[in-house]
Length: 444
Ligand SMILES: O=C(O)Cc1cc(O)ccc1O
Ligand SMILES: [Fe+2]
Image 1 (cartoon, rainbow, N blue to C red):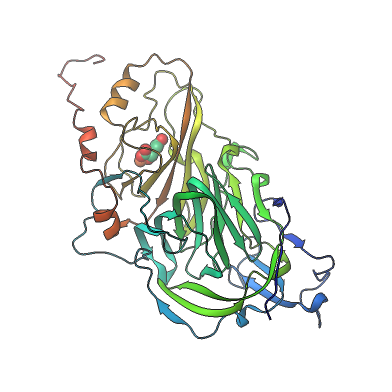
Image 2: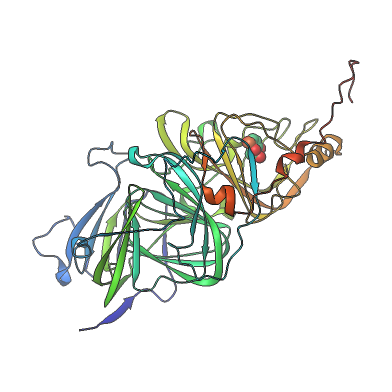
């Protein structure tokens, strides 16, 4: 028997908060009250727990969600067969004849003629750490033109931080629906089943695949209780379920491999849920930047939106850092980023507009990589302009770039080194930085 019903609200609704303990039901009375596992759940639903942290993780880190669903997940799975998604790579992935040491920059990866889904359109640029030990990350570009139909996916390896640059996508997940456009981000937790639909295509964007401990909000320290990313601006969808019987496939990413199994119904059948392990979206335009208001250029960590700890205090597995429009008011200061070498590996992407350290060549949809201890900084044009500028308060407008910064060196994939539009002349952008020193004191 075929049945089809989607119980999604007409206009998508979201609940505010980061890491909140939410409760939501798509049918009245579907959510058990006062306990998790009643002998029988209302509507004949099955109770099931999704654990995002070890059972015994400390209280402030412990994350799990109770789902009340038409069928338990174990009915979704069965005999797995291995499939190949040749462009989606996982760490460790170090290719002998690909050199990751260097300063690299890419133009936007163009859309081709082939129809690509969220799975076939994922193009890994770099990997870092080791998926098997749940450390490190991968950075991907997605190129998506086609919705997943009767097809579902989850990653046992990672949570995905999604940063759209072009087009609009819908993430129909077990716990509700998220629509996502450029200048917004979403986090899809490890283990959560979903399908990706194209609302406006073609869609392109960046993904940070986090193998390690979950993203959290950075401590604000002396900044206090407000500014940077505020909890209420994170939005988690309300429950929405599909009661749909149709021959379908479920793909699982597991230890870097992809496996597929058949299911006879939509696994997005969670009618009600409660808990704190859930997908979330965030509008980057609500990020409140705090910066230097008299002199000097602070470390970019002041712009951290989210941080994924590595176990070494203050040394993140990944920091997600945002360079958005803001005022520059520093006096007697070289205002753009300084020249530097960093023990952390910096992968940047441009979402929109122009980046102050690289007025040319780092374009929306483009990426750059400055790996562990590789020197970089403003190009010649940015240096000359900033060192001779009249330092009035100036608003940096029409700018939104980000950085995935990891403690682990990032290794290029073959795709990044050979197929993606790598700019061979990138390093030349520093060529014209000639010597100004002539042994005599004074400003040159
Ligand atoms: O390299 C970059 O452009 C990112 C960056 C920005 C900044 O303001 C300070 C340091 C830094 O690495
Ligand atoms: Fe940098």
